[in-house]
Image 1 (cartoon, rainbow, N blue to C red):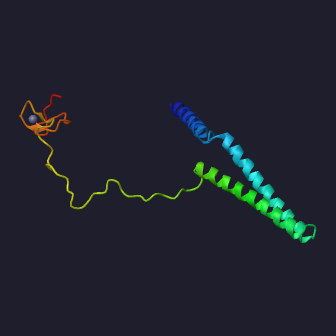
Image 2 (spheres, protein in one colour; image 1 turned 30 degrees about the horizontal axis):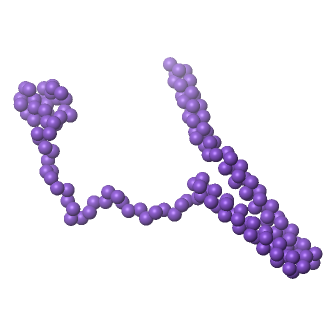
Image 3 (tube, rainbow, N blue to C red; image 1 turned 135 degrees about the vertical axis):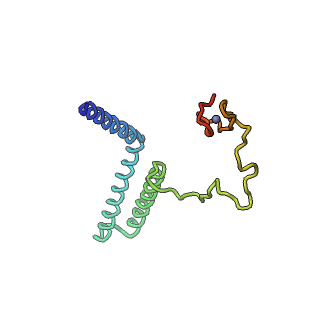
Length: 151
Ligand SMILES: [Zn+2]
């Protein structure tokens, strides 16, 4: 008997693992590849900027060339960073600013529920065949005498 339970538990564990993985993997592999591509591009641009600064400090570049190349790289970098940001937001990696949460069902003072506080005895009450006592409809046995109630 214990073996049967063990096998069942193992089966459940494997099934659960597979199920969870199935949920985790699908988030669009295409989008992941795109994100990877953007991250690679960002690294390349960082490298380019470093090289550019290095060459400028070595005196290999004129001020004008340095400025225009740097602006080009920074412009590309800004675009890449923006794309990465948007992609990560779309994937829900970053917490979005929470909208003002107002409790929808908040009880308003001075707006007490109208109507009877007691449940309507006429609504679905069942009358005990033995003692004629009134019981809630969901009761299967009389609350007064314990007799079985007809449904
Ligand atoms: Zn009864």
